[in-house]
Length: 346
Image (tube, rainbow, N blue to C red; front, top):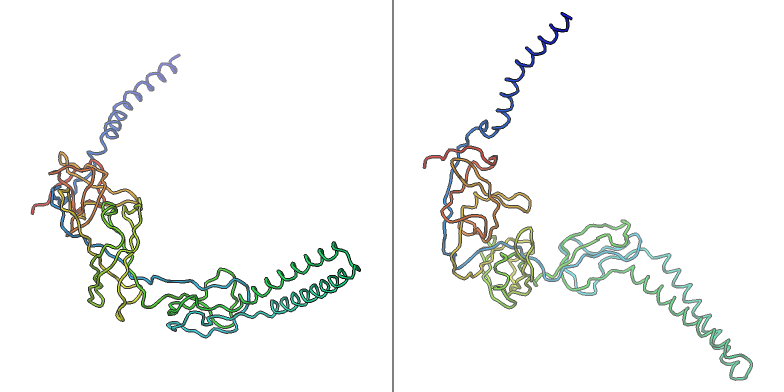
């Protein structure tokens, strides 16, 4: 009995000692934001600006006509008369494959066709003398047609052993050598037209309805310090949801200084409008989401935003922020929601 009394007393003492500790731990768990250290940040105001008359986007020069050269049959390369940079004319031989087996099939198909035609001719002559039936002649005529189709098919396969240039141009990539095994779909060469170039670029989604085919835009190629006029050839009717932009293609006049792959800048004319802007450094893209931290009660507050065009180090805010709010421009890379911040003195 005494042992039971002592056990109860010890349990009560342990419980009384444990409860304050639990209460203290619970208080610490309830206030995690108080434990976050303050971060020193730089800030800027969300301001309303008049959008500039022009916006510059970047693009790449590419050939209008480009082709990947591959084989439609399997065979070893026996002739490859072109090198990287070779200029070729339409119809010129690019690759020749070994075709011994296919050649044998052609000869066999030709012999079968000739035999079928001889049989048909013989029976047709007999039919004129009433020495053959119409059913026999009809059957032989069908056999001759099948043999002719087989012969044409084998000739087509033989023609596949010779790959010619689809258009006049220049060899830009060479991925095979004599002796290599060519298989259907495996790239062997790349060819493109040398003097028929265009600029591929992306325009902000807000410009899709303002840029039309045959519009003329200014194009600048920094590597050769050349300014040319680009004529809009194609405009995508929809925007890419990941970049909120749409691809367009502009044809440009040939120039010996221009090459496929060169960097280009395209100037777009914009209508003047009032728009909210923040410094580009305030916006953090994470996948397809763009976020901004604003300062509220000396703490970082996360906002999801939708952006537009960039200009002079600023970016247009289409939604998510209001005028005169304070956004964090530096020190925002590792911020957490609700983390205390101190603003750097300017």
